[in-house]
Length: 151
Image (cartoon, rainbow, N blue to C red; front, side):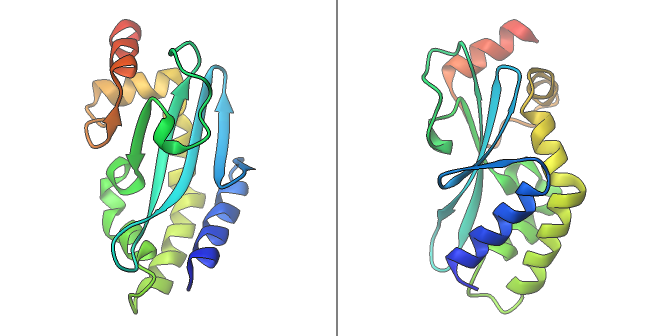
């Protein structure tokens, strides 16, 4: 599998779950929140899936990349119970990658997309913050202040 096929299959799985394509990203909006999903080249043959959350009124223009959001995570850090599958699916040079990729597509349809969309709400982020699920990624100062005021 190459990068194009990896990204295409991932985006198709997200499209089926209500995300929309926006250039090189997948996007879903809920009230004043925007969730972005994209892929990023890692080391060797590894590709990572990144998820970012942005809220209006946070002092920034709506982002054009995951890295510009208020909260930014690699998918395996949001779902540590599926870390091995997510990382194996993104290792395009690994012999077990096709099976892991198929399992990831199933997880996106059954669990991951629903939970990412839930996190992309004010209530979902506050709940995750209280449960300490947001410690594995980048949380900007603006986001921390916002989370403290709404939680």
